[in-house]
Length: 285
Image (cartoon, rainbow, N blue to C red; front, side, top):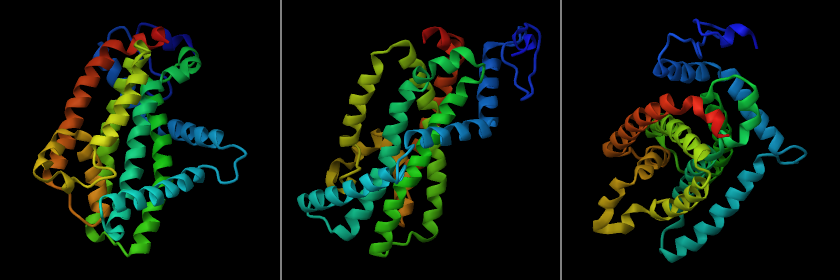
């Protein structure tokens, strides 16, 4: 680390980011952190791959153990809940497979967002890199795991002859919308949980509650006249903009609007918090 990086005058390192030049506002520095963290995609993508390889080192199947466990869960829950709700397995198993894959991804980035800074305390205190890079590293790692889990849906869809057609292309836009929301949620939770260490267990309990009130294992049609309650659940909309296209349906416009509003409001609030508390993260660790 050169002395230039710590000077109060405008200082640029090789990557082009300005971190603590004395003539810049905190908002500008926070924006530089987000921009530089995103541009360093080679670094956070390699770190994410390294995390996956480290977690499954000396394992025969590696991350495909997750795929196997997901397959067992889909098969067992599909038979149990399909029988309880008296649903046709041909329509219910694909619905459950894609829903569980997406929800596992959502639950993972919620949980890991809480510890995204805490688990990297030595790195944050000793290496000067953008704070947002740690969030992108965790998000990329969970996206890789999601890629393994979604294979189960592909197999189930192949078995039952489900082809999403042109509507399936909307799943790419839906996944992008989910990732945009995941970014601010992880960053916000990372700051909150670094400051207040009692929050992660609370978030774990909230995730369990959200799982039961979000139509992952049950279909929204079962609510009957009370289906309007789903409008109040943002995670239903984020799930639906991916699940519906993969099942060959076009998501309702209200799901897209809800997801976009959730992203806009969430990023606005998170950026304000990040601007104010970015420099304090290292001291909270």
